[in-house]
Every structure is written in C-alpha cells, then in structure tokens.
Length: 473
Image 1 (cartoon, rainbow, N blue to C red):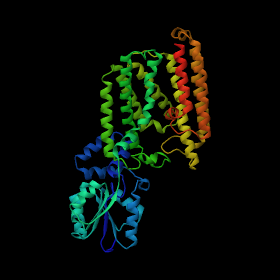
Image 2: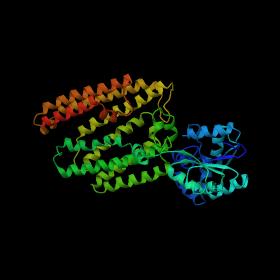
Image 3: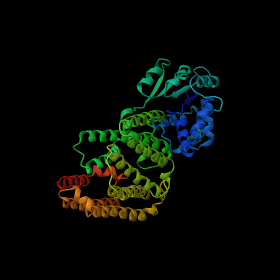
Image 4: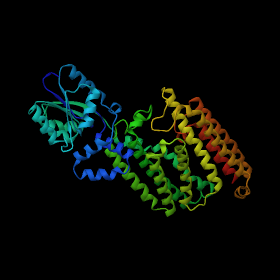
C-alpha cells in the first residue's frame, strides 16, 4: 500500500471470487440448453478462448450473488482509498469481467480473455508487462498458473493455501498472503449429502416385509444395492447443485453449500460426479439386471427432475414421491422379491405427503423472508394452504390403505399374530398427524425424511413399529 503509483492487478477466478466463470457459465448454459454440451465440445476444438466467448454470448450471470473473498475486497478498497489504481486482470471472458468491474465500481481498467486470446499464465504476464512495464505492478492471484505473472510483478499477493504461497516465494521475494483454508474431504462429503443416504434405507423394506432378514445372501445384496443407490444419488446431488448455483445462493440455508459458497471447485465437482456415478453403476453390475434397470430409470428421472420437472408445480412433488417409491421397488428387484400392490399403494401417498411437506416448509421460509415466490420452483407463498390440504390428505390416504391391508385375507396368511399390527396403524396415524403439526408450527426443516431420523419421537415410532412387526410374526 506504500506506493500509490504502482497499479494493483487482481485475478478474478479463485481470487476476487471463489467461483470459476468458465464452469459457472457452462452450467448455466447446460441448464438452459442441455444439448449444448455437444456444441461446447465443438467450440473447445477451436480453443479455450473461443469456448469462453461462445458461452458468454449465450448466458447471463448475476455477478452480485457470487461468493467474493471479503477479506481481499476490503484490502482492495483500502488500496483504492489510498489512491492506488486497481485493474481486474483475468482469464475469464471480457463480458463477465466487465460486469464484475461495474459491480464493484473501483477498477480503473479490465484486462480479460476474448474470442482469440485466453489471458492466462504467460499471456497474462506479457499483457501486464506491456501495459505497466517489468516489475511495474503488483499482482494478486491464487494458482500455479499465476507464477509467470508473480515472477514479473513487483510484489506477489497470494490468495490460497500455504503451498501456493511457498511457490510464489520462489519467484518473488515480496509477498502479501491471504490464506484460504479448504478441507476438501469434509466439503466433498457435505456436498455428497451423505446424511441423505438414510433415504436409501427404503431398499431394505421389501427384505423386511418379505421376512428375508435372516437370509445373509439377501442382506448382502440389499447392502450392495444400498451402496449403489447412495453413490448414484450423490452424483445426482452434485449435478443438481452445480446446475442450481444461482438459486442456491439466494436461499437462506443453501447458500452455504460447498459449490454455492465457492469452497469446493466446480472442476472437482465434475470429476467427483463421474467417479461416484461409475462406482455406483459398477456395484449395480453385481446384482440382477432388473435392479440395474430400475437404477437407470431412477437416474433418468432424477436428471429430468434436475433440468425441468422441479420447476413445475405439483409435477415436482409427484416426481419426488415416485423417486422414493422407486427405492422400494429397487429393494425388491435386488433380491427378486415380488412386491405387493398394497406396498406400492401405501408408498405413493405417504411419500407424496412428505414431498408436499418439503415444499410447504420451503414456502414458509420464503414467507418469513418477505418473498412471495420460491426461486426456481413453480410455487407462490399463497400455495401453502393448498399444499397443506393436499399433503395431509395424501398422508391420511396412506393410513387408510394400511388399514385396508390389515383387513385383507392375504395379510392374515403372513403373520401368526396379525392383530399386533393394528398398533402400527395407530402409530402411523399419529406420526403423519404430528409431522404436519410440527410443519404448521414452523418446527420442521425442509427435508422430512432426514428430520424423521433425527427426531427422537419419530425414531421411537419407527422402533415401536418394528417391535410390533416382530411380535406379529
């Protein structure tokens, strides 16, 4: 800060913001036009700069919600107040760089990539030396690609971990260091939503209801199916979050997700998605082909949900209910256990009730923020009352199906003490009533399945249901 005449040049991707504009804009384009992925491959053949230009021509990014480095922004504003000229110097496309510069209003100029030049590494160093002279500028960057620039700068300003700082010190003795600690393993596990794997316990339902829980081979097959579904589901969670960055950043809770907050790079997310999907499909190959077919159908439905269906009111909740039910079907297919129509008739309305509960709670959060519409969804806050009506009706319909099943002739052939299961009917009726009452009171988070396994009362209900089922056998 001591020499106000020396310009301070700042990188954008990974430095001023934790985002990467190429990947950010790519996922916006992919969400708008899924088939454009093939165009991107064609554009890439003409060079990375051309790819960036073509994507930038087709998408719009809201630079106001990007995850900026607050500590660095304060440093830059202080430098600007001291009279130093600031320049945004980035490999991001000129259009996006200009938008960021306009957003902050503190940069004297912008140097960025265009259709023919990818302003990266040596190209960036040459451009800065041409404009400001050898060692005539300070440069702020975050990666190995910035080494040629630090080498020709007066001072290196480093945003990143200690390893990057040590690399910068080898080429420039003057360093200002802004440490960014990222523990990638916990971030990856969080983004994979490992806690959501509890939903895949539905795979074990046919095993239990088919009285096959003492068959070790069947239990092993169900465990493999659970792992396969969990890994594939996590790959979809990653894809969904990479497609929903803008929406998540506006959400009161989702803005802290690793991708939305910029703590986990999107480039790593792409690799992780491919690895998880490959591992999940590999495990599926160990099971009957029918399970693999169900898994592929599940994946196709979830991708359709991520791109289109989740934005259509009511269609989204019916899709979610179907996805939950598919888990039960997969549990039957992995062990060739035929599923009762009663089980399907119970599953669809109970999961529809939970899906509507999820949307109801999301709308309640929007209402508390003074918003009238859920971003990226087809609902208004005024839909809360109708969702509550639909959801409770669906829940009670499931309870009615259970009561009819308990009166059916085939039910009495499966259990020695069938009357014990009437306690399950009462417990289910209580549980459905309770979760909707908690939602109405604002005491429910927006994922009822996860809430169920965290809530002591719900866990007690599940445990008691299990006890009465064993007593009935």
